[in-house]
Length: 223
Length: 223
DNA sequence: CCGCAATGTGTCACCCAATGACAGATGACC
DNA sequence: GGTCATCTGTCATTGGGTGACACATTGCGG
Image (tube, each protein chain N blue to C red):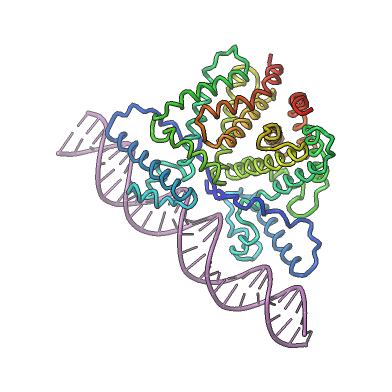
């Protein structure tokens, strides 16, 4: 299965930079070019049958350079998901403290979806292609595994934020773990049923739908 | 993340064979030797720093032979989990039809754990080393991703069995998907908290504990 | 405007996982 | 014992990924 994903945590960071010097602009340009060329190739011939060599040839840089921008081929493919995941955590942090955890999660989901909807932030978040990205990830075992890893990372993030919000110890109190794991599992399921069709709105509706049955339980267990 | 796991489905199959001819015995012997040598090396120097070459040198076979027994290095490392996962599905199939889904899942878990407890079925299920195997998997990103893939595979299996038991269509009725996803998510979480310490019994206790809060919800949604 | 330091990039060499092709060895079965 | 299927080793090759080093470009202070 030849997979990696060692450097997930350091993958984003460089988002919406002020774009000051020429150096930075050049870097951003080659990075975007790599992402664009990669997705074009992925769509036309699939992820596994696309070599790093082909990507770098299209952009006219060396293979070595590719791996200075992305720790691995899969990190490139998964960057949209990483961005979405981080956006969600950020929105969750912004939820008012008096919301119950389950409501904070649902509201953060709506907020994050609203942010991503307009698209056009930069090359990776171009929402028109996001649908195809989802399809590609779900249909490529290697990428699906990495996708699940991002889900795991998201779960850990949620545990941390919820525990902080509710002022409980995430080690001794199992509730943050439970709600985070269940929420992510339902999100993943919703994402699979969604399949990328019908826009982000449909995904949110699906997730809400799945979550609805469990809301009473989680409300009871927290206040 | 250099991972694979393409041939998960075909990995088990050869379990508790009658051991007839000399040929079969020899094959089984080299296979077991590979597994044993691999785990020794994994424990002493970690998964990623162990090369296939080192494993095959220890057993004195060619690298090519290794890949005739295992589709990938990670398939070898994950075979205990695959076996456990398949055992669970099998037990779930054996549950009487009048049990509610959530009860069938819990009972199947107990049954499968009981089966695995004695250990000593063959090299891979040697339960004494299973604890260390879990630790190794959880601490190796590459293996953790593959572990999550097995969880996904288990989820799909559960959906199928539940839908069959309850005579519902798994595509239109979302309940099998929900209960399977939630169950697997809680199992995974329990497994991470467990960490391999305290025997399989403790894992079952943890899983039961996590599941307990959601039992009322799932009982209500089915009958 | 110039020179230095930092940083980005290309080249080369290398490791490891994995696969295909082919030939030789070995057990199965009559 | 001989034939046949199957297992195995050897060889060559591909593709992902990394380290080392040299060169080029940019940023910046004088």
